[in-house]
Amino acid sequence: MNQQKIGILLANLGTPDEPTAPAVKRYLKQFLSDPRVIDLPKVKWQAILNFIVLPKRSPKVAKLYQSVWSEEGSPLLVISREQQRSVQRYFDAKGKNVVVELGMSYGNPSIESATDNLIKQGVERIIVLPLYPQYSSTTTASVFDAFANGLKAQRKIVPFDFIHSYHNDPLYIQALANSIQIEQDELLLFSFHGIPKRYEDEGDFYSRHCYETAELVAEKLGLPKHKWLLSFQSRFGDEEWLQPYTDETLEGFPKKGVKKVAVVCPGFSADCLETLEEIAEENRENFEHAGGESYRYIPALNANGDHIRALVKLIEAKM
Image (tube, rainbow, N blue to C red; front, side):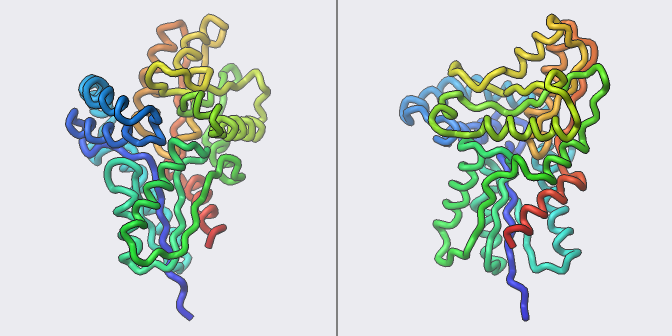
């Protein structure tokens, strides 16, 4: 009896094709035009985006990408490709008839093209795994939208499963805990990407997922409440976002007597600009300038074995 051929779509946010202002501008235009990300009135926002935001931010962001870009390319894409290969190797070793594709909500390879590739390879089912442990309308829902757009071009829509979130999955929590070692006099800061507070007020339960992840990891590590804290990074624009803010928290630590800190970003499945530049570099400088003595960034789970095991078990639960 032939095995059913299953397609796995691993999805993440995306990255510019190059660390140049034109490439970053194309990427940011697509990203910031998504109403899931920015839900302001379209005509008003597009005018602001095209005439103010993109001309001003694109060159600055390009320089930041240049600081983390490697010979292989964007860290997010390089690591995501390794995750894709690792998941594929796992199922190949199991003798499973599985095809793994990688798709990005913005930029290349697109989720639409990845979906098309799976269907062209004759898969009979698709399992979509957004690499966002904590659900947010700004991330997970955008993956769903892009996947649905990819299906619009298909005459034959195969059955599919969509993994909503895995913020409290035991293997994911264990993988995080295994990656963290805290010294006796360090405070552990869980930094998650922020979203506008209004989004939460309108029903997004992202912050609940973030707090549950942090609490489970702290419990697994045996950390008392005074040894860890949660904050939100990467805010954009003038609107209030989820608080406390990571940058302000780190800058204020030394005045409160916190001189040694370790920072982990559990919402990022792969290291990227927001972790390698914003957290590992920019916030380190701010913390040390404010009087901090020791700052450690704990890398994302990336393609390490514990993380891949957690991902494949999430997938197998849907097979």
